[in-house]
Amino acid sequence: MEPKDFTTVLADAFRDAAAEHGQSYPEGGELAWGAVGAAYLGFALCGLQSTVLRRLQYDARQESGPVILDCKWYDALEDRCLEGKKSVQVLLPGPDNTACLSTVTRDLFLEMLDFCREG
Image (cartoon, rainbow, N blue to C red; front, side, top):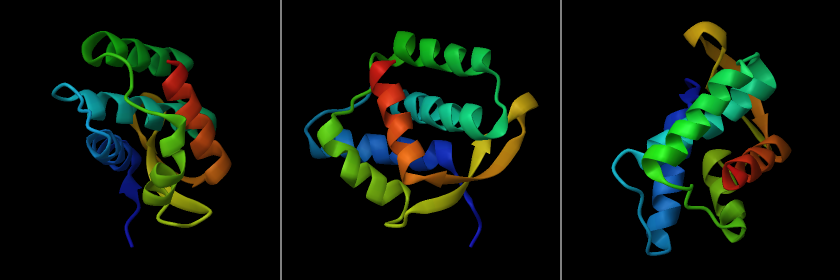
């Protein structure tokens, strides 16, 4: 099976989790925060520059407000994004607008969610 673009996977999960709890993102907000989460993983695994990550984080917060995410939702988000596995291969943003095939583990996924919540 083809690896998925993790920005889209995470954006869909953020949108659905918010909706399940009676909340919603402004237009494009879930995609902006999905890009932040994917960029964090790209920074950790693929050499994405920290300046790119911070710019995406700043823009998402300015344009869409804070990420809609409660730590109580982590298990459901993990199950959806990692497809019930301990890790999954996905495409992440790499340096110079490249796509980077990487393995995202449960621990790194949870670390990424914390980064988004703190951002």
